Length: 407
Image (cartoon, rainbow, N blue to C red; front, side):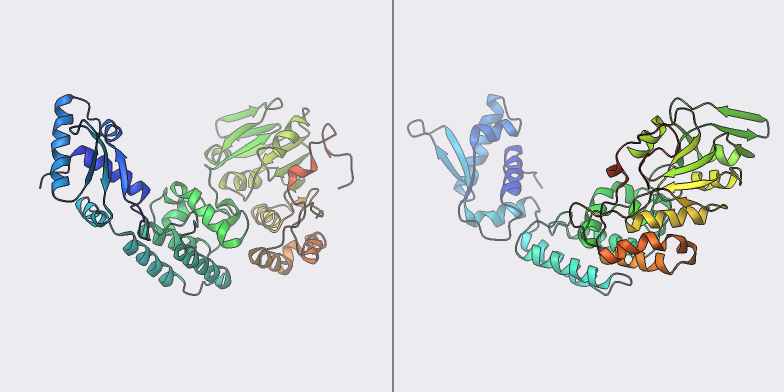
């Protein structure tokens, strides 16, 4: 079968982008300037342009296209137009699927996916209903699209699996394999998955907020540390700048020592961790950036001297308290909250159903009993409040406790 000429392929590409995915009938015929079309198709020599003109004229005789010519020089083509009845012919010529068929397939995907969710039945059914309504009225529903039913099915299936289980501390690639995907699938589709999670839960939701560890098992540290290996010891002099340690190095170490007087894990790595590190030039506090505990942090907690006091500085939303709970579970010594007190927010951010579930679990956990007094105002206010660490601003003291104001 002879392939379509390049200029017609370019015409189809432009028509597909402008009209080919509409499910409603077009009111006007689609057209493209002939010179622009030839340029877009890479047809520049006189011989190739003459061939293209003969091909277009043949299709005009068949009634497939309409050619608008120069008023006086009739041999010059100015514009090529696709009559509305020829849209089906063009679609069939290039194997394009009728968008009505695609939309109906997408509706079937949503209806099949709308079964009861094991953990979030209301949120899941609401999401599916919103997608059905949006597709029906041709409103955008990013990251979901009816134009690719197979991708829609994979995205909904993955979201359902992700939100059906618990993932605290699970490496993202391990989770990907456990879901029946290739090891890098969750990372490859991360943007779409997080947009879908946020639409489902009604607020910004990341893979990390589900507990997944999305980076290599490395930890950022500021402060003095000594790793003792079987063949000697390695002193890490990092009082000037933060450094990174891998799980492999920490696992290989027989012992971990520090001259710091305390350990402080910090949830926010981009801002708060750096500010605290800059405010502790003497290295009196071993400062470690950590959200949900990774293998590297768990190894560090296990090998640090048991007499070293341990603190955690996290956000005060439900996920922040959950991170503290998971760090406590990974630490052989108690970990105390540092400056984690609920504060009213400038704007109202209501708790989501997912927040309610997390808070109920935290309040029922005996290991978090000492924090119930700080969690209670969050529950009573029914809003997240001013929960982010960054809102406290940078430290105003050099060294511990970093802030002059009462916690």
